[in-house]
Image 1 (spheres, rainbow, N blue to C red):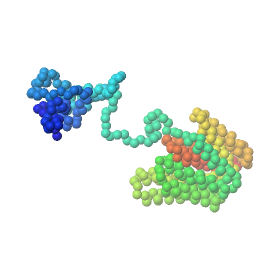
Image 2: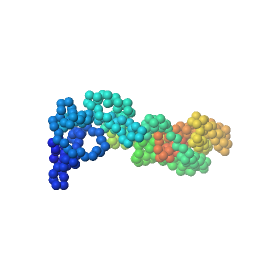
Image 3: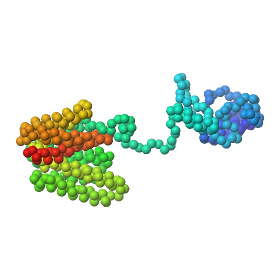
Image 4: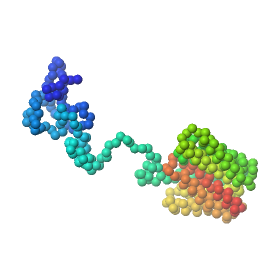
Length: 378
């Protein structure tokens, strides 16, 4: 610590150990008072220290010069708040702070708000999701997968159509791929990742439904699908009861696993449906998702996609025994595909969601329509 002069100001020692008044460093405020930040003034040439007499009662110095209004006596214990920062004027190098006395704090606070500065805080902002940030910024949280996932969906739909025309065992190969992508995409769509056990459980439910359909035959399709779904719901509940997670996490995991397993088992409806209906429905879904991915206005895009799905169903129906009735099946399958595509676009999804749920959900959602309407018109 440097010694202090007569005025209480630290004095820097010279090279000979004496105190040179010409290099005295002074402070205008108490350096230990952290509640006050003095104004930084431009550097001035060093002035020789002068002995300071007792301060005059009127606030003037010993030499008659008035004290600065923001200076604080050495013996005072009070402190001033941080003055408001004035916005930069044209050509100004740095913002200027004005000294605000304690009695003017309310006026300073109002001036602080008028200048456009918010009150400081140490609490921070709580984390928000990308969808909430998009809504706050005026952007839509609904993002369509786009042309690349639509092209993959169309390719998978054509594989289903060709497999159905060949036979049940040829249809199983693209169907298993569809069930795997459905299980993975649904968990990621719900923000649960990684969820290897839930994905494996849902995918296993789809495989069991396929095996049950192959063993029982198409005529027993509803019993095989509903029986597998009931067993898998019970199995999921039992596994969640053994979990050591919190109640909210277990409930979220239970709902996501049950929904994913239900969708995977529901996709097996393609295997239970009439082969001609699977061919027509898969072609209609492929055309609908491709048209929906085109850069068209929202309502017009939906209408054009539905019309294209109906037309594709009618054309595909001419190559099967369904004939012109394929237009009705194509319209229903295309509508279900658009619903699945909308679900995959909800809540600001990621690219992984687009490449999994955005690919699989249109074909998976169309399975009930393919089964029911195909049975009705065949």
